[in-house]
Image (cartoon, rainbow, N blue to C red; front, side, top):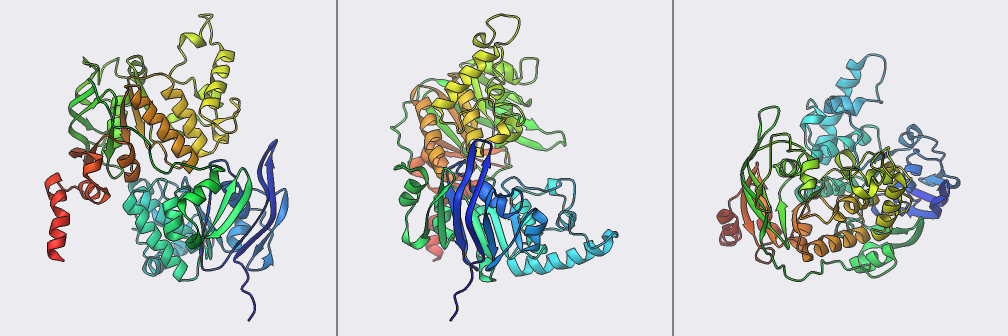
Length: 523
């Protein structure tokens, strides 16, 4: 019996960007019909390696073999021709195009679009039936959720006859339910003989869905093991090079006076949709109030109103004094002057200007600070750069170069830049959305420690996250949102993911609490 050739084999791959060695002599074998995980800290070189495989980058040295044959991949078209498809962390979709138009885009059969669209429509029906990838082909991308958008990206790859599918942090923008559905789809793809490479920082996902896992650290491949023969603790240590605390270590909260008081808060968007409906909540000094909910149920609007990004109606008090929600003092600058810091949910769209340097980004919103304006005539850029260097050191931003553009940093290090800017302003109230989205295990541990430390200093923290595990670990109280309303509150040690999930689906506290009992009676 002859040995089965690997679906993918990389030999001695190296890639440098100036002085930064992103990949160092990497070799890896991925067997056909398997789900192969690749994990590592942000900046470990995972995405660079996959971008070489997909033809976005050209390796400085090394060889690529597809199904045992040496293959040159100078660009993404060559990768597609070799049967490779890639779903990026940030989707590559045209938002005002339909699903069908996005699938066909770049794969048209000729000058007339009609035949290509008819062919694609028929093929989408077959693919949806075969893999459970049901999506309305006529829906506009901008009108469907991120879970559906991800299905479109997978459909694009399958439509182009991909046998090898690379997914880069695929659950970073998904709810737990959407992530579970994605993994069911991946198992179906695997059962049909597809080969899947899964880049993720979530150890639970690695343990649940992969057959084999490779670990990268600082541009090198440190280990490849069978998933069934390892553990989350061992993988975390291989990733970071030290033992990592996989739980949040914190003492019980000691809440004091109310810092934030919200009563009857309402928001209606430009299309007349009622996004927030009479929100009441309180956050006290020295506590974390976690907001759980499926994305799109008002959490974003809540953060934006409190952060001064959009207006609202109702009463919001900070340290007992009313906040302007509609007038000239309703902007973010006024909020910051009152002691509010805001880490937005989308770091790339709302937290950073990607083409600007790290030192410029750390000054945004705080550029009037006296330490940066000593001459009173112009900003002291040298002082801001020095301050950024110190923040990068304390928050372990890699590489620690304040002159690099924000886009040059990995997602986790971009998040650290935003966190450093906001946390180090000693706010009375920290608004923080999706703090560890797309962030590796070592950075998650650090970010959680910073949030707990701020709480222990007596600060009030309003935390929004779609990660129920994170909500349960960090929160002292949990409020659940559904359809713009607060469904109820829970204490973390008196609830679980199942009950919170039911409340997130719109069930009342009482109905959710009764659900397990009812289910047991039915069984």
